[in-house]
Image (tube, rainbow over all chains, first blue to last red; front, side, top):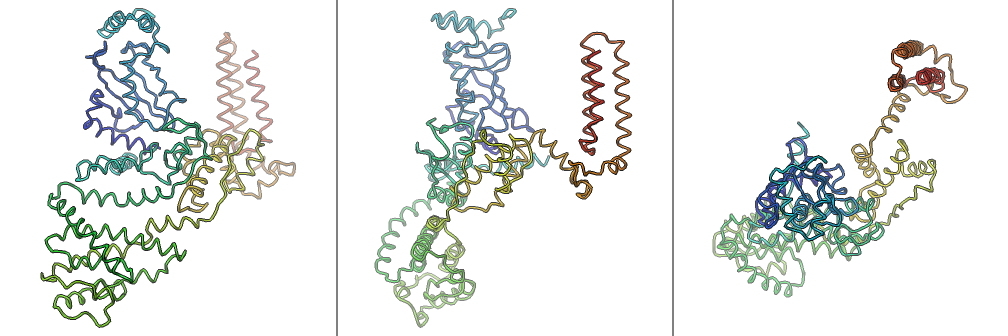
Length: 160
Length: 468
């Protein structure tokens, strides 16, 4: 199945350079020339959110039986304050990245796009960061956004 | 490095639907996209249809259904038995895939726009002509009609005509052979393929002769406005007078347009029609492994001529993959390969997917068995085995083993008084275990019943170290 990755490798590059709908994905490519199983992506924060103006790094690990199994994706650790992201590890809670919900019809580009959408649309009902989720549930968006901005601008998270 | 080179080769072979965006018909990229499998992203290979109306490569979807019972596109419930083969799509895709490069080349917009205008222009004119011809023509010999068209082609439009022709030609060709096969239900004898009708005089000649000698003769005659060769057929009579322009223009066209028609061997249409006579091979059923004994599983595998080595899990994987290959090949595919090829594919799959440590252990044993002549190994597991002879022939190994075992014992004893804590004791236990393991792996050459005593001493030594 690695031929599938090869196809994606070639097509993703073209798509990113040609398709304006993916302009928020700044890059998506293998981490090194040697290994097609490790990918890295940079996405820009969605506009009109607290994440706007910041770039985020996604790390992919593609299993050997991809696309039957979903790729393992996470944010860089200690970089993304988001109610569905574990800040300390960068782990992402997104249903399509789970075995049960993944389908091989999706590809890496879909994953990145879905994660970008998740940034803009936090889902407080399955939180990995309870504090942020609580603020969203309380509909205190200004507090949420301020907290996010605080972390993004280098605010310390305290000992946890 | 060769791996990287292979990768690069793979990368360069990847095709992109967007290749068509820069051609004169960008809409073709849609067709190109549609003919691809959503799982492997390549052109559909032996496509199958799901009840929810989606199409995937047979192998891709079967492999996925071994894990999840749903359609990857709409998430509707789906089981392997629901898949239906789609011969039509299969042939469409293969046919398209083989045409793709040509299409791209021809439609590349870097060619001048004049061709476009002319193509559309001539197609309007050309098609009615073609139809009237067929209706007039009783012999219904398509090949001839087409080539006659070449002759009336206006020299100014020859590029477009040529292409139009070659397109029609392939279509015509396939329909012709398809219909013949439909009625006769037999493949045309190969000797007929070597014969072709001369487009000018209508007589049939051997291809070689036609292309090299006869065509030139015929054309020269025509150009000189001489009467056609004596027994001209009804088609030849309908042939319009040769164009006023020099024969030099007509000649290459005729020559080039004939070639493809001659070279076509089996058309996809033909194969599609013949698929009706596909012999029935029974579907390989899914097995309920939980209710099967190991022996039953082995019997099942050996009845399919599959290897029975490895763990139960590996055998199950092996059967599942083979079942997939089998059903995809005999049920879904329009031209099946034989079982030997399937087993070869299974082996190459196992090499990369079904390997784990258990298989290494088995291979060590089988290596050992292979190394020793069968005469010696006879009765290996029974009482008749010649133990004394075995002892003598492997004396060296046994000595070394005993020495190592004693040293190991000494070492563990020595470490005892210094290290009192339980942790340390465990460590020595572990190390002696490791030692034990390394020895047993070294001495795979010793039959198990002989090793038993050794193993006992090891066990006691390691037990003593933990107990103390």
